[in-house]
Length: 215
Length: 332
Image (tube, rainbow over all chains, first blue to last red; front, side):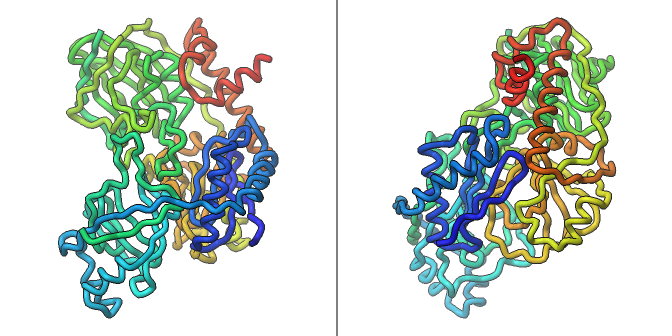
């Protein structure tokens, strides 16, 4: 297990990197440090952003120094790396109706499969919540089966409703806003990942696992 | 007294903002809040709203008609000016809007200003904050033509010309290299610190395009990483964008450097087409500049309103956290 690399992000944040690729074991170290920081936040820590293989620590440079903050975080990373975090499992129902999954045919053609085989392959995948990123409630899931891993479209296309289930490469995402995307739209779910009015507006946590089933 | 204001016209970047939302970056929700925190703090200091909230106005301006009631307001930020029923009240002003009167705010240099009313807004909270994320509209909300804004407990403080801060310096913009400077050739890093760049007119609350020599990354193979305001992100064609208040919380494009906090709002306020240069500094130097910057802002807030009791105002409102720190440091 390699030692984490620390990089400055201006004078008020550092990035701690545990690797440079999308990998569940590396992401588990990110999640473990994130939880250790939440349980025992170092003096001056403002906010953390866990991602695939790195975590951003924002701090108040008037309350602490980069050196002190990094020393405290690395000490936590050492003890946290042995901790195995068990996430929750979620089941997400998906409609693969042609109106909900307009790109199913194209994905099937590129993968050399019948569209029913695309659905079966997708449902057989085991997905992990790696991070939230980009915009509110956009949970990045890894675990798309290799046969369905396609490069994204050359140009983003508009008009896909919230709840769209989209894939690109090894990644899968359930959208929360109507946004243009260059990913492949293969289905849609009625399950709100972002429920703005809820006490707990975000359904998943990094480290959770997802199973999709046909609605 | 309850006051109702009808929005007659609003530029596309007009939104409700408070000091910003903490703790939700991990869910893809940026802090949002004002692009120019000093303009925001000044508007709140002068208008003393009960809600810690102001309306952020950009180039498109804002026109409001008071349907009912009477309310004080403060307009602060860059060269934005106000008119009440066609009577110019200038920039950096505290004034009163009465029933039937029309307030028109116009851009007059700079890109961002804040308008605070002396009352309590009914705009909604989201995740404990009224800061608006423009893309989703979550938070206090975008302000659009046809909306009716409501304020309770309206007051009418004495009109006053506010002490506008000194003109912004045109020193180079401070940056700390990284976190992905290794994705660039030495020549690109050299260009970043020596070549002239231009603050383009292409911006929104998410970011601002900075024109200059293309700084093309050597590779683009990184998994998405977290980002913060000030990050200078380069796309594959070498085009640079500075991330701002509503930034994407993660991104897969390399970030060559980070604009220091003391210079973030200065860069955001530069008129479109203004030339600029960057200067690489250490994190220690960046921190020293931040301390001086916040101390200067505290002094400016102290001078803003004649006879204002600043400490009382600051303690009652959630302004820029660092301003209070700097004030304490300054007085002890």
